Structures are given as structure tokens and as C-alpha cells.
Amino acid sequence: MISRGLWNFPAYGLRTHFEELDRMKRHLDQVFHQVEPSRLPGTTAGVFPLINLTETPEAFVLRAELPGVSAEDLDIQTMGRNLTISGERRIAVDRSAKYHRREREAGRFSRAIALPGEIDRDKVTAELKEGILQVTIPKAEVAKPRKIDIK
Image (cartoon, rainbow, N blue to C red):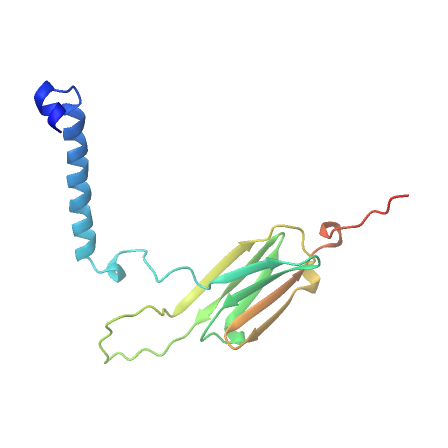
């Protein structure tokens, strides 16, 4: 700035440190843009399966997107207040084809979901229809709301 150049403002040392940090950030951005994201260790297309967890007065309802997964390839378990969905998605891969973009991954997956209340594990039901898994998890009697009459 003009004031720094004219009056030798004392913030000169800070400015050079921030310029150096900015230069390092630009350099790292260039490096990461040159590396293909699929080749970085630990990067995937995202969390799989995508889920929605809703609550009614009687139950929790979990809906998960599982395209290409059959019921035989799924394992659903409850432990305490947790629900685990695991399985395997199989996708035919053409080894002779050159992929320009590959976002759908095949392989084993597992997703653990902490439920916000006590559940009745013996009454959990699951249904897989058109690639959507719906798991209905009834609440335990102690977790259900109870109306108290006033006398």
C-alpha cells in the first residue's frame, strides 16, 4: 500500500510472511491439479451408500441408495443403538475399454449409523425395492413418547 511505502509502516514483516504462505498455497494447488484424483490414496467417489434417516413417533426409518446390489449381497445388523449395513456391489468391468470417467465403484462396503434413541432390535424389518433399501427400526417402549393425563 502507499501508506506502507511512504511511512515505512511496521507491518512489513507480516506482509512477507503472508505472501510466502500464499505462494505455498498456489504451489500446492498446482500439484494437486496435476495429479488425477482417482490416483490419490484414500480417495473415493464418496460415502456409500447414501442414506436418509427419519423418525416417526413409533420408529426410525432408514432409506439407503443401493443400485446394483442384491438382497443376497447385504448384511444388516444391530448392536445397542447402532445399525450396520454392509455388503458388496458387483459391477461388470470391461477390461478392454478405456474409461474417461469412473465414479461407480465395485467392491465391499460397510456403513455404521448411530441411532438417536433406544430401539427394539427384535422387530427391525428391511425391504429392498428398485435399488432402495428401507429399514424400519421400531423404538423401544421406553423411548416412545407417553402422554400423561392431568387429573
